[in-house]
Amino acid sequence: MTLVEAHVGSLEWLSRLSSLRHLDPSYINLAKSSDWFQVVAKLHSLKSLVLCSCALPPVNPSFIWHFNLSTSIETLDLSDNNLPSSSVYPWLFNLSRNILYLNLGSNSLRGSIPEAFQHMVSLKSLHLCDSELEGGIPKFFGNMCSLQKLGLSQNKLSGQFSQIIQNMSCGCVVNSLEGLYLGWNNFTGPIPHLGGFSSLEALSLEVNRLNGTIGTSLSQLSKLEFLSLDGNSFTGVISETFFSNMSNLQMLFLADNSLALKLSHNWVPLFQLKWLSLASCKMGPHFPKWLQTQNQLVHLDISNVGITDIIPDWFWDLSSKLSYLNLSNNHIKGRLPDLSLRFDGTRIGGTSIDINSNHFEGSIPPLPSNSPFLNLSKNKFSGSVTFLCSISEKTWNVLDLSSNLLSGGLPDCWLHFDSLFVLNLANNRFSRKIPD
Image (cartoon, rainbow, N blue to C red):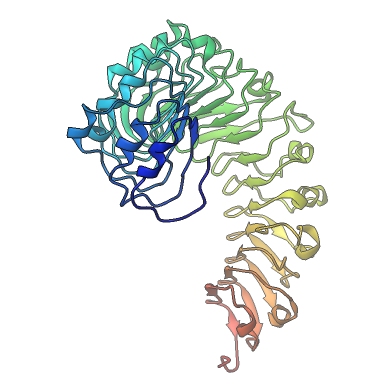
């Protein structure tokens, strides 16, 4: 049962649905439904309870001991409700026998991860992301033989990452784990060898305090589809050997480290990426030719990577599927082609384009009308901007043409830019009257 979006008071009427097996009133405001726990506790046939983003009021502690939720529940999602630990833990661990999928993300869970989770022996997926959990990752996770996904991102957890992996490697979870999400915490140290995690498909370690090299520590993860190492202190060189077994890789995030990519000119990767972020890695001075093989890209960020080249013709063949392109903070030179023809003008949401802080020159070409974000600032573009008036159905939200060599008068058609909320034309050579 999935309810339509609404604001609801008492849920007492639900308690009469004694055979109800699935309940999902997500995104309905239940802030005034102070009886939600008592009502749900009466649904003894319930298998799946999803109360995501419902503004649930905290459970009165005096009710907890008088009501027990159905031990038949297999899926429980209470994410994004800002619930404190005291409203969740006391009754949650009575469900340990059968629960398979548990999502408590985006609540106000505090303190260390409770040892009682180890009794949820059937658990396949546990998400405790975006809370205020502290301390380390308990050793018992290594013995949770059914666990496939563990999400602990965006907390205040800490400890040596190598010790965490060692604890997990000693147990049966090394064979079952498919997704490990530990980003936005305070884990430290290098990445140890992870070859034993043969089922791992997703590894999220971004924005921690990890360091060292990553040359061979991940190279045996043949099922890996998602790898995020952004925002750490990794160093060293990544060669094609690192990717030699990653034929399933679809999303790769290595930005904001001190990494250098040394890939041979004729290298052809085994994977087809959809998302790629290499910002601030070293990979210039030329455009990496291996990108020519990546025809499924929807997100590409190669900003501040030391490219001093002109954009090769083949690069624009990648643009038809892109929803985000960032080439900023390089030293790319030359002229741009007609961008309105290179990007898909029918794409829902358009393509955000950021090419600021380069050495592009010449006149600004026709721009895609459906781009929500266009940043062409800090280049050497010259000429008039009167062409802006000729673009129909403009859905731009941000247009930044500042710090160029643009000249002439400003066009008098800004009333037609009804979606525009940021316009920056500063530091150019415009003359004549500013339009009313």
